Length: 124
Image 1 (spheres, rainbow, N blue to C red):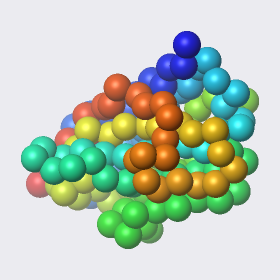
Image 2: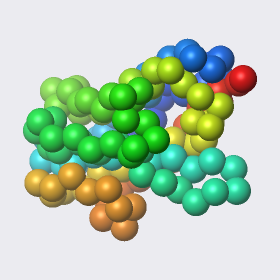
Image 3: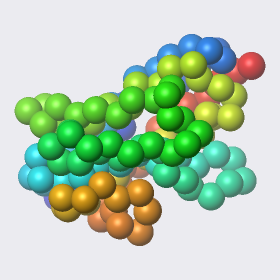
């Protein structure tokens, strides 16, 4: 059974930082591309960042480029999202997702497995 579990969310002031983690089990993690998506209140879920199975290739949404960094530790079957210079508009539920591919998908439909999500709230 595949499980993706997010952690590290919470409340932070604007300009602050948080690091999200996504720990996977039940799949060959080192052969899966991983992604982060988020959904703000009354908005559709959107792409945030993705990383290849090797960690060499990454992709970011324009809105987070230069502020967020995605990374992974295959030995720990964990992916991370370091979020710096947080803004109130980053407030959302953040989801991690997995797909067994050599590509770096940015579309939600490309991902097979999803975590339950974790709340990130940035106060102004």
